[in-house]
Length: 105
Image 1: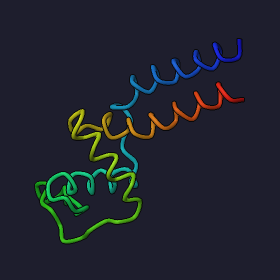
Image 2: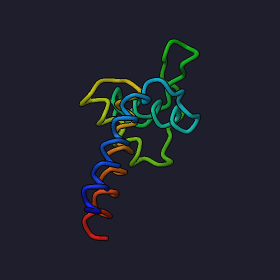
Image 3: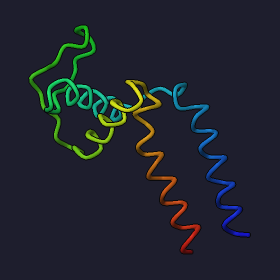
Image 4: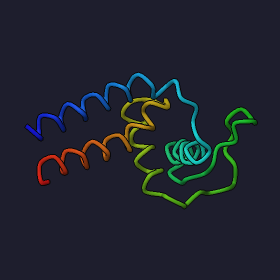
């Protein structure tokens, strides 16, 4: 019964997430990672993209949280560049953590 309830909570969370993922404004730390993810896709290095200059690459490389940046770049590659695609990586790990808790708790 607990596993069924946990799966229902996860399903509800994912449904709400899909409804809100594109509507909520990106946070400042998200924008930095997503900008570096675009640079990573374009050059193979996490260069930040300057959105105020027609998405031109800057000489600044962003190595903080490089794993998250790399996962966001792979998500962009799979699903296209969108806020929903970028936010799918944290969603995946959240769902996996909830499922592991439901199975092993």
